Every structure is written in structure tokens, then in C-alpha cells.
Length: 141
Image 1: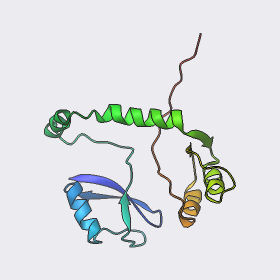
Image 2: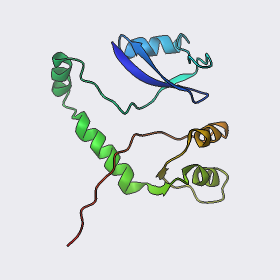
Image 3: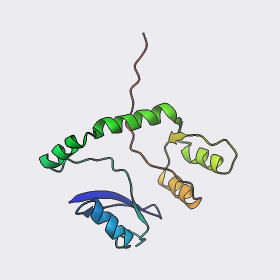
Image 4: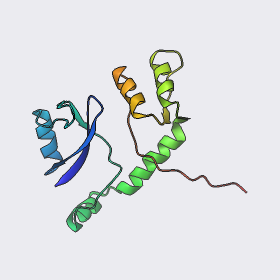
């Protein structure tokens, strides 16, 4: 069994358990997965801030795949920190300005409240939530 963090098109986040990824995809395609808050069946997986080791066998399979997921996650976070402008708490405001052509489009990162996220979804502005860890910068001597 595996738990996925999910989000409906209305922005409600919830968790659901499935036998495997294929089971989720099959059920979701058939509109059998619905939001427990509003019954919306337009559901997508979102990035989970928690990872769980399911078994020693799964660990061996991951090692044999040649993919170092911890390194990959670090590289993604590093890339975002190095290539996206940090707009802090002004994320929604900046995204709206780009959407309406007030400012040039650019890669940004920052924070938004649940209400701000709802506004972005209502305006059909795509964004992706990534759980970020603080990146410590080395001080130059």
C-alpha cells in the first residue's frame, strides 16, 4: 500500500491509499477518486513532503534502478534556489502581474497563503508547490 497526497481542482488537499501507482492512475482515469470535501473527481497527485521506506526489497529495487532519489531531490531544490527569483510573500502578486502582462514573465519562487492559491487557481494561473528546505549559504572569508 502507498499513500498519495492529492489535490482536487478546487484546491482541497487530502491523502488517499492505493495498492500502487498504477492502481491510483486506473481509478483516477475512471473518475473513481474524489475529493472528500467537495466530491470533485478532477484530482491530481501533488508532491509529498514526506517519504517512507516501504521495505528492504523496495530499497534494493531503487538501488538497482540506478536513481539516487535523495540526490535528485537535492538537485531540484538547488536548481530552484539558483534559477528562480525569490519574491517571498509576494508570490501571488507577482504571478498575477506576469499573467496580466504588467511585468515580464520569469521564473519565481515564494510563498502564498491558501486564499492566494485559490485566487491563482481561479485565474487559471498554473503553479507548483514544492516543499523547500532552507539552503545554507557558505560565508566567504
